[in-house]
Each structure stands twice: as C-alpha cells, then as structure tokens.
Length: 184
Ligand code: S3P
View 1 (cartoon, rainbow, N blue to C red):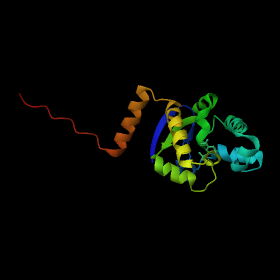
View 2 (cartoon, protein in one colour):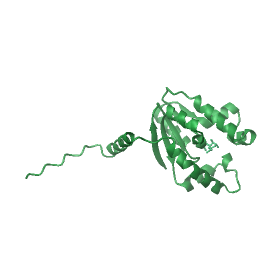
View 3 (cartoon, protein in one colour):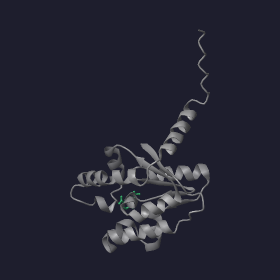
View 4 (cartoon, rainbow, N blue to C red):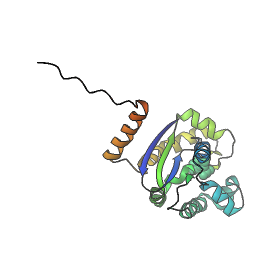
C-alpha cells in the first residue's frame, strides 16, 4: 500500500482512499498508537440510520447516503486532534473536500488495483459492487476517483520540500559531513 499526505491544515489525521485501501485498519493502528479519538464516517451514518450501509443504499438510495456522509463530516470537531476514517466516496462531493481540508492532514491510502478489489470484495458488503461484473465496476470507479483523491488537495512546493526532508532525515539521521575543501 502507498500513502500520500495531501494536506496539512487542521489538527486531525483524515484517511481517504478507495474501498479496500485499509483505511479502517490504519485508523485503528493510529488510534492505538496515539490515543486520539477515532471517528469513522461510515459508522456515524450507520448509527444515525440504525441500519447497515448495505441496507441504506437500496432503501434510501445513494444520494441520501451521500448527504448523510456530508452531515457526518460536518459533525466532527475541527479543533480536536482525532483520527478520522472516511468512506471511499467522500471525494465525490466538492463540499466534502472543503470540510476534510479544515479537519486536518489528509492522508490518501492507495494500492494496486487487484489488491484493492480483493479486499473490497471479500466481505461482499459494498453496495456499489453489487453488479453483474463487480471487477469491471470497481475498475471504473477507481479510474474516476483516483484524480479526485489526488485533487482533494495538493501540496505546495514548500510542503512537498518539508515532507521530503522529513522522510530523508528519518532514513538518514546523521548529518552529512561537509565535503572537505581541496587544497589548491
Ligand atoms: C463507498 C465506500 C464504503 C461505504 C459505501 C460507499 C464508496 O466505505 O462508504 O459502501 O462509495 O466507495 P469504505 O471505503 O470503507 O469501503
């Protein structure tokens, strides 16, 4: 799995990415390691409706689910340092992108398509994959969404430089010795 930090505003860590990217597992690890509160937009929606997502879609339709997803995002605190796990479709609405940016550092989890699909399809509980050809459907959704995940926000040159330097420093903590001047 790859990850990409795409924004640094706000205080929380917000995980975005396709179904099967591992957002919930990574969210739980972050929660365990940091002790920060863990919020999951899917879980908030499920609690508010009092039924599972596979029941919400056929009963109320995708648009109602998307609305509930936006309301779940809006209900999250912008001033607390939390771990926020989002549903894969969170990037479909522009207003959601604005809300997640205010919430914190956005981390996009991605992976190769086969792995993502295998993980997303394993439990047979994703309503969007209840089609004649789930593999093809998944591919179409992924193609349409990857640019949205990438564009939810982009790093400025300055942020990119800081992220690269932070990574390099962790890999090679000893400062390089200065190159000795050659005697002329
Ligand atoms: C969806 C992803 C699901 C869930 C719903 C719709 C999507 O969450 O919100 O089935 O549109 O990609 P996960 O990303 O946790 O599977």
